[in-house]
Structures are given as structure tokens and as C-alpha cells.
Image (cartoon, rainbow, N blue to C red; front, side, top):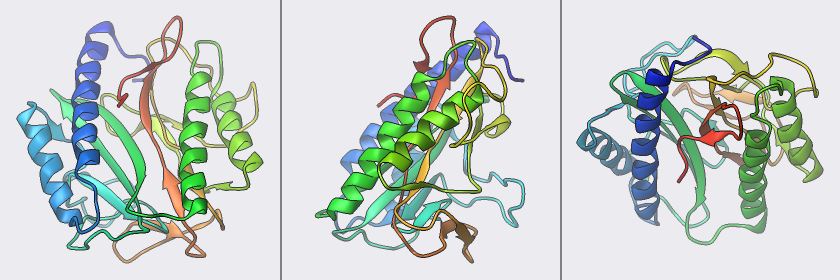
Length: 252
């Protein structure tokens, strides 16, 4: 399952285009007073109107007690990932992480972004900027002949230089046929170590970064939050390894 065929890649690319268009619309609708559940309803509507399905809805990852009940993960402030969208109304100062997947004819892409609501702190803005840039540095390493360790080193090195910490215990993954496939794509590592990247691999890179403690705790809702309650940020793209430059399939 590591190497996708040209026909599989065609459909994965369509999935990625649908995801990108939905992400753009969701971004336009994030503002003070918006209810998280309404963003979830909108995401499902847009995905289905595009002829696809929400990949997260009903998905039960390893270790989870229940299937995920929504189309998007909506994680606020200290919550890193897997936040369930509820009746909470966004307020100024919040930083919101939206993470979702699209399944088009059974072919899946996965992406996430973090956005500030209203007036946010300088630390929150820097955290988001650093996390987003660390993702782009990781993507630059997604070339045939490079290794998974090169990706992790690029991400973690940049995050640490900027005074933040990569969240421990969470990582990226292969994607395309299933939502979560091998290999695990860690956000820290050593250069020239780990699996060698080959054309046809499709990877979901997703740095998750904490402004404080890098360790996480699981909440009653099965989401993951920073242990010390510090802010966190999360950015993710689905990336295709080619013979030349990496191709971002969920670019928006």
C-alpha cells in the first residue's frame, strides 16, 4: 500500500482538490460567534455536494472507544487534535484547529489548518506561523531518495530554534487507500535515517506544536490536549512523492 498506482493517484488528486475547496470555504466562515457544530454541518454539506464523503465521520482509530461522530475535528486552544465540534461559540482570542479528510470513490486525503479568531496574542500568532512553516520545511524534504528522518529533522529543528516544542505521541502517516496507513511520519528524527522515500508514496505530514509542555493527555471526549494547558497549533497537507518535486495534493 506504500506505492500508489497512476490510476489511484488520479483519484487521490481529485479528493485533494475537493478537500482544498472545502477548506477555503470553511476559512471564510470562521469568526467570532460562529458555532463549531455549524462548521461541521457546513463541511459535510460541501463535501457531499462535491460528490465525496467525509473520511472522518464514523471512523474509529486504533485505541478509540467510539467512532468519531463528526465530519471535522475542531480543536480549541490547548486541545491539539480530535476535538469534537459542539455548540461552543468562537470568541476573540481563540485559536482553532480544523482537521478533516475527504474520501472520493474510496480514495482519501487529509489536511488541517490553525486559525486565530478575532484578536489573538503575539505568542499565538508566532506559534501558528512557526508550525505552518515547519510543515513547508518538512514538505521540502519529500523527495525520492530522502528519508522519513529527514522530514522529522527539518520540522523539529525549526520548531526548536523558535522556542516551541513538537508534541510527543502524535505523528503523520501514509494516506490514500485508508485514512491512516503505514508509514508513521514523525515530527522529529535524524537525517538519513528511516524509510527511504520513493515515487508514488502519498504521505500526510502534520506538525503539531506546543507553546509549552510537549506532552499530551487524553480528555473525556477522546481528544488530546497539552498536559500543561498551553496553546497548540496544527497544520497538515497530503503530499505525493514524485520523480521530481513534492506535490501538495491539498493546497489551499
